Length: 257
Picture 1: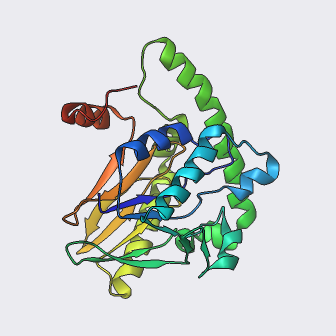
Picture 2 (picture 1 turned 90 degrees about the vertical axis):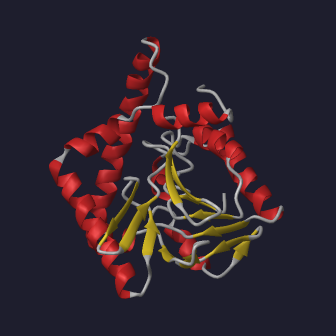
């Protein structure tokens, strides 16, 4: 791959799917790795810290990739906003920037940023955002019980209770559509062909009125990433889904775990 785009990993939390992320990274190398916010969850870590061996291995792997020549760019989000105090500084060959203009192999220009800039709740009603974060964490904890039951019945591919609830709540869906429209409009006004962001944990690649909206999703519920192929084509990969497993198995790269 030419580029990998990751967001909303939420290191430091029980919900972080670090094992799945490591498995994904074992199958994909790239010239560029873009970490588009909420990589570390300082909000949740104020309540409690869960730092697993897999999470530590992920950090080591990213640092190793940067040392070995892959370009790694880190764009802080709202959950790791403390790192916005260090914009323009490199940590272990990892660049920390507020936003980034990336040109695809086919010449299209994309604006890269986390996306909390487009979220009125996060910007102006922080206490509501924090409360929502606590409730979201509760759903994720319940999801571990659901996953255990599913495995008992032989269903091995990942399914998210929080993600299912989000898709079923009408107000949540309207928030997502409003977020997309705002992000797409911002990219168009600044002369970009599209935008790549995260924040709302809803992975998608969608073109409207000639502007492409791309969201990386997350590594809490959906375990998704965006990759850029060598020809500039963008692809959404849901790691662990039935479709991803089938595609990888056909190519002989891996088998379903």
